[in-house]
Length: 56
Image (tube, rainbow, N blue to C red; front, side, top):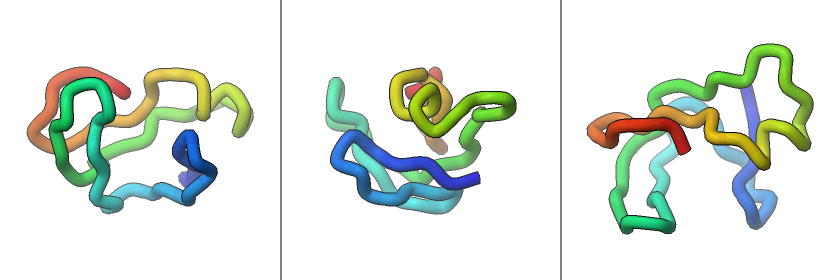
């Protein structure tokens, strides 16, 4: 699955990212986007990051 961040940069499983709200960094473990359109993916909490609890 492929989606994009708020700046329209492509992100995929394995991409290194930073969570803007708390500055935590990690690698994308999973993108939970089944049944969602690209627009819905951009606006929902659907990314799981290694070492960080919750979805972003």
